[in-house]
Amino acid sequence: MVDLTELMENDVFMAFTSYTTIILSKMMFMSTATAFYRLTRKVFANPEDCAGFGKGENAKKYLRTDDRVERVRRAHLNDLENIVPFLGIGLLYSLSGPDLSTAILHFRLFVGARIYHTIAYLTPLPQPNRALAFFVGYGVTFSMAYRLLKSRLYL
Amino acid sequence: MVDLTELMENDVFMAFTSYTTIILSKMMFMSTATAFYRLTRKVFANPEDCAGFGKGENAKKYLRTDDRVERVRRAHLNDLENIVPFLGIGLLYSLSGPDLSTAILHFRLFVGARIYHTIAYLTPLPQPNRALAFFVGYGVTFSMAYRLLKSRLYL
Amino acid sequence: MVDLTELMENDVFMAFTSYTTIILSKMMFMSTATAFYRLTRKVFANPEDCAGFGKGENAKKYLRTDDRVERVRRAHLNDLENIVPFLGIGLLYSLSGPDLSTAILHFRLFVGARIYHTIAYLTPLPQPNRALAFFVGYGVTFSMAYRLLKSRLYL
Image 1: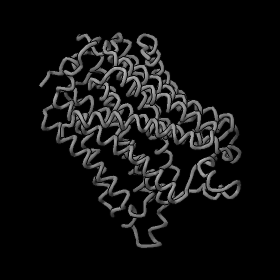
Image 2 (image 1 turned 60 degrees about the vertical axis):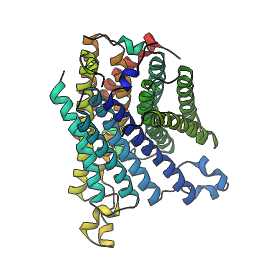
Image 3 (image 1 turned 120 degrees about the horizontal axis):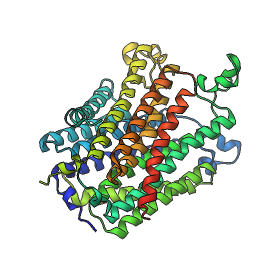
Image 4 (image 1 turned 90 degrees about the vertical axis):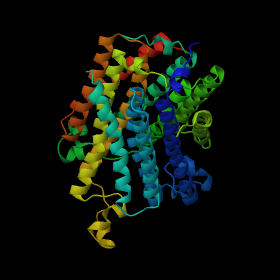
């Protein structure tokens, strides 16, 4: 068996690992938030989910949508749409040998912006709080993509 | 050109490769399932998709939603929400030098739980079948995230 | 600090990096397209987003859905559903030591197909333009998955 510890001794890669694990865990928390609101507000998407609350027509009334649940779901989808590019581009960027302090600045800004985005979406805070958080995360990912395409384009 | 076979001779990484390829292929199958139900039930989201079934007003009646199609789409989105964290955290976990048997146990549980989740969602099986499958996959991903953050935090 | 330049000197991995960065940047552009249509058509999902257009009941009328916005959102979700498997399977495939010209053919076909898919979805072009673009991207990903599972299955 080959020793892989080499990759994990690289500082940039270790930092990427920590920040990515944190932001993906935060994204997974959105599933729990959706489940929490669905159960406390009795708002379900599937008949089998509310079978315990009554039979037949009685249960069907829980098959509805709710502002709060839809808000959490939009925040979750927005996370997916933004964290997937960060995951791919950030991984490749980490392996391209960037400067350590520049890389950590990118990761910190992204993770901070996405956590603030969730807070701004769920509170909800007035705009442009959420829009700014979105654009900071977006800009960080584009900055990493730009560096990758500028220095290592191979088509 | 550098030889990369080193990485692919690592047992944990090879196991991660196989399980990830299987679960991503399963997720891609959901697109086919959606297309199958859309075509057999004639339920479409875009006017151009049902142009072959009639012209003008005749075609518009196929622009509707259907319980079965929406169920497959929810299962697909739930896959995305859970497989993306597994992909990122699992890759980093595989590179962090875990014990082989522990790692394989994680991968097997996750892949088994997600396949069972799809079966429970599409059949549909009564709850708590789907909820349990969801939480097993969720727990596996958190267990890998916990190990990464505990042993290699670098902020 | 360990030198990682080795990985980035591998031709297949460099090509994967460039094509992945391009297609993830294209996917991120869909967020901007959604924002553009939401602002120009005044169609919003959150009350705080249209607070600037009026107060109370006046603002509520902008909380609606719109064909154009929904079309962009479907294209974006379809991107996510297809680019995530490409990201995972393509990364593992790139590390499995494939032939350079075969690998580049896979990446080019996928990126070309997904860009054409977006054009076909947003124009919209008549079917089967979009369906063909979808199946080319789908086939490329399955071809890489097949190679991974055939040569390196480890369960």
